Length: 148
Image (tube, rainbow, N blue to C red; front, side, top):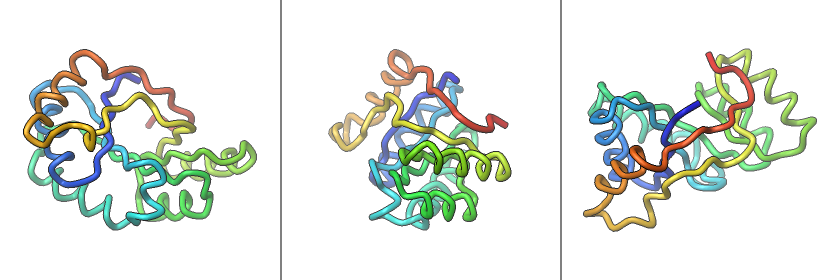
């Protein structure tokens, strides 16, 4: 699947990614930081996503929640409507989670894809960096699970 993935740590990061997405017409994924759901919580990412989607309805964007190796947290994310869950736990647990993602119509990612971490970009250069990432570096993301 050809998407551009951005690691977002704050609302300004998500805004820059969605402006670039709307301009380019490409799908983007807003990915939580590594194990981000553990310390930021499910509600944080849901609130961030809701805020930017209302601002940029023309942008084609999904949100991916990095649950690390925590199966219970990944299952909870699905119960709260997560569209993409990133899970790095053992294979047997991933198989169980795959069944749950299929049932929920969600996607399961087993590793972090190439992504632009917007915390590494100066705020005033975030939009330019997002445009460049979409044009030159957004790549194929290996998806395991339902692509629906």
